[in-house]
Amino acid sequence: MFLRKIILLFSVIFITFAFAQRKKTDTIYVYEKVIVYDTIYREKSINLKSADFKFSSLKIQEREIKSINNQKIDELELEKKIKKLKTKSFQYGIEAGVGLKNTTWAEAISGKKQQFGENLGIWISKSIIDPKFSLMLSANVYHWNSTFDLDANKEETYLDGFYFSKDNQPLLFQQFNNKHFEYVLQLKALYEWKNFRPFVGFLAHKNSYKMQFLVPENNVLNKLDDFKSNQINFGFSLGLQYRIFDRFLIDVEYQHFKIKNISLKNSSFDFDIFKTNNTFAERKISLGISYFISK
Image 1 (tube, rainbow, N blue to C red):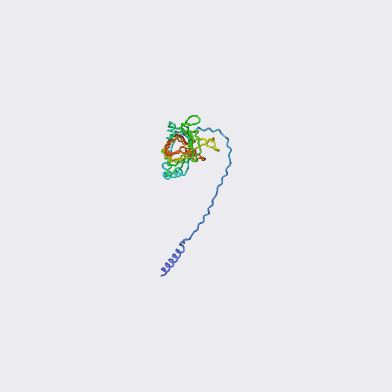
Image 2 (cartoon, rainbow, N blue to C red):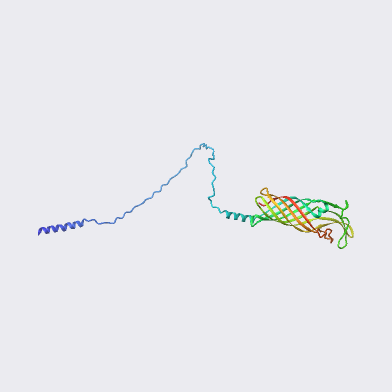
């Protein structure tokens, strides 16, 4: 009995001691201090002695042309922009040439068919709808040399004699020839294909013929006066231009007119010596060169 008590006592002491020796879990906090050091470098210039350096000549080792096909370019859009720029711009220039003229009434008088002349002109054009299609407005002055000369003071002519105005004033014929100036205003429609530019035109012209008469002054027939033509006639033209350089064109042109009557008038006398009911044809062909002043 005593032994049991001793064993129980030791058991209690052992258990108590065992629980007294169990370790408990504690929370531990660790703090870390970070120190950043920055390094500063100090540079000093160094004096170097110059030396003679020799380099070999540069040579092209390889040539290469890179394709740009891989770049995406909207060609249609670019072409539209170019067309818009071209159609908005005006072009202008000058022209000169020589030609031959044939008028049926003059041929009947002189027997000569061709009349030689020269011309100078200015023009302005603008592309419409398409850069290859354009309208051109031109103004030219032609000078035609005479193919005959009727002078009553030198020889007999079939125009010699007295003529009378409507108020019965006497007029004495003196001289006449077909040397004259011609003024032409023309509207052309052109189409450019490569270096060729065919065209068709509508034009108006005025021939400036002059005939001289002795007219009365203070009831005495002693004043030399001119009777001039002042008619405006209409016709058409056909032609072809060819671009030989960037700014130069050569052109061949045919013009045709119908002249209804030939009337020579004087502001002081109501009289028409050539007024008839006939219609005459006038044709001419010219060769010229044009120069673009505009860029």
